[in-house]
Image (tube, rainbow, N blue to C red):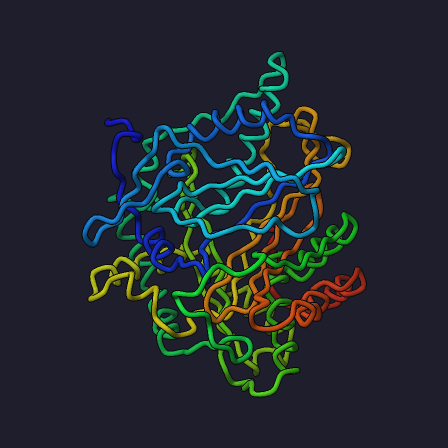
Length: 462
């Protein structure tokens, strides 16, 4: 097989949609921030970045437009830009600029530190990689950093199969399972019909920035909330008792919170559809050992006023819908529909740039992260990478046109963290505070879930 570093690779339909939908005013970049106790050894870190980046060809590639097709073009001599800032770590992410993947490879790294702590922020152009791939990259980076500091304690990096990059757009579908897969997708036709018939709205009326507008000032702006270990344990226990997953419960809480928030604003109609886009992983046996890539899809949950009147029924509906999607692998409906759209007049470029609200908000939840890391842990379950202790990771989802806020959640070392990326061009940051406080205000809020009389088959998934 020709060396991947010497060949162009066509973008799959998910990557192509993300590319065409990227623009300075609404960048399709997401962020992973790693907050450490300890001071980063600059030379060791830079060597680790070089070693690990060479294992992930798409993170070191540009996108080239050739006619109507888009290609990844690997850059052998390019490494992620590392920005060593003269700033102390903080709750807010460092400010960034637009990452144009036609001119710069799809990963940037920003480092801030003082005498006792440091944070490393990865800015990823979504065409190049998804969230789970980025956390795998981050795990390798921490392992290699530990290796660079102490050659006597070698952590073996996971074995990768570069050839899987060429199969990332097949999502595990082959001639053996094609008929079963297609039969399952027929169930998704009803959902696809509803998707086209319903017209979601922004949470409150707004006019998005023009495509020619510049990058938002001091972007991203986030609100952060973190459950301690006791609160997280209570939430997991409550979700199990209700027979749902933590993800179901958080999804319900986000819907209820944004509904309450909308109702405090004039000019909103409770009969409008609120559409939540939820990324879902398409990883499986077929992708084990793949370098970082987009092996992801999206599903869409639509709800409106009548659905928010009974929180228990809302939770039941979310749970049933999510279980059907998992059981029938309906995450494939979206990329299959994009394959058809690619052949329509204007293709995915036209679809990505339509001036209408395609989703009201985004909720990204990769669940537990770093659970398979080979790094040692302290008594709190926090990873030890040489002289560094990973205190917490954070994930921040991008804002899209007509989105006023996007949500993301990760669980690490027995603690759930939630980040809300807010669009301060529409309203002040403080006006979003009630949304986050409504979702998870305190342990009493969580405990109330244990009293929910929801009749669902027990599911132990996170």
